[in-house]
Length: 105
Image (cartoon, rainbow, N blue to C red):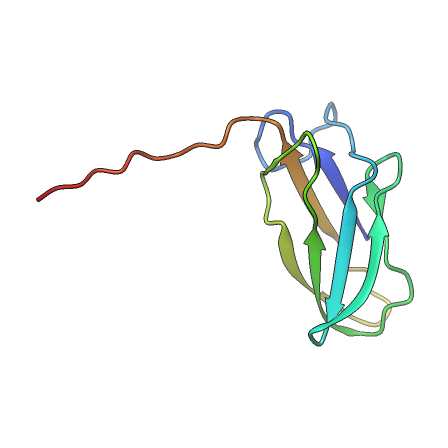
C-alpha cells in the first residue's frame, strides 16, 4: 500500500495541503518477475493486496504534468506476514536543479 502526492514545495514529505495524484501507474516485481500493476485512486492511494512475504521492487511510472520526483521512483520493499509495507512517492512540477560543471586544467 502507498500514496503518490503532488509535492508542491519539493520537500519530499507529504504535507496536509498537498493532494494525492490519481491515475499513476505503479508496477510491482518479485524475484525479478512482474508481480502486478495498479493505478492510484482519486486520493492518490494504491494497494497490492494478498502479497506473499518476501522482497519486492515497487516502481512508480512517469506522471504526465508532474515530471520530477522528490522521492526515489523505484523502492525495495519487504513484506512480512501480517505487516503492511508502505511505499510513498512524491512528484512535482518544479524545476530540476543542475549544478554547474567546473573544469580545471
